[in-house]
Amino acid sequence: MTVTPQDLVEFVPTPARVSVSRRGFLRHGFGLAGAAALATASTGGYALAEASFDLTVTRYAPKPKQWPAGRKLSIGVIADIHAGGPNVGLSRVAQVVDTCNALGCDIIVLLGDFVANHPFVTETVPYEAWADQLARLKAPLGVWAILGNHDWWHHLDRVRAALARARIPVMENHAVRLGEGSSRFWLAGLGDQLAYFLGHGRFRGADDLPGTLAMIRSDDPVVLLVHEPDIFVHVPDRVALTLAGHTHGAQIRVPLLWPHWVPSAYGARFAYGHVVETERHMIVSGGIGTSHVPLRLGVPPEILRVDLGA
Image (cartoon, rainbow, N blue to C red):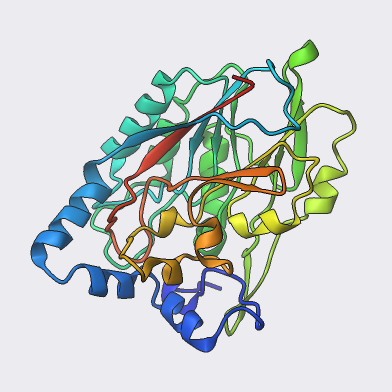
């Protein structure tokens, strides 16, 4: 069954936390944000340019207690590519790949949502084309991916086939130990938390956090890949670092209003950046592409370089 973006709410509503009005805001997504923020054509032009031409490398050096001091690992993070014009045409995908490769990271991870499917797509990027660009990503410990909600909702088989074409393994409730000797660590990846649309703003996830962590059978530290950051409330402190995407950092940051439009049951709590709660660390990427409308304001597209043990 194909479900249009207008039919979907991009978080799992919790009755105690989410009101009908909140669901209404998010059902229309960033479109309402755009209507409020882009009151003038000049602002709209700036937001379109920011989404289409800006590209930032954001660096983090978290120090989680679960990661041994001096065990250096650099991670390149690309989230929410949403390949498709006007923001992310094929040349833009190539730019993202070149920029990430230039960072020289030990490992590169892709956090899902590979194709644009908002109503304003001006250029369709063939799946094979963006896959061939992603195949150029290179890192000593490999390139690894998880899937996002839009991958599940739109042409899942084609996304899987494209990543297979690029020879990029997809981590779905799986963990693998990487590195050698004293530099070993576990990379774990979850299935998407909003994979199956059940109707009326309800979803069933394909994620299995307990089963994934049960695969980890040594004391080596763990890096966890998730698409939606909301799972962080359940992530134990056994995990050194969680990496997430999905929110686009709210995509259009209108003062006072933007926390209501973050696609998360927790509002601004997990919207963007380095989150530390009870000594547990998560980094949420603002991502590359756009959802609902091809605009960004105050949250430029970004690639992350995360340095552990620095």
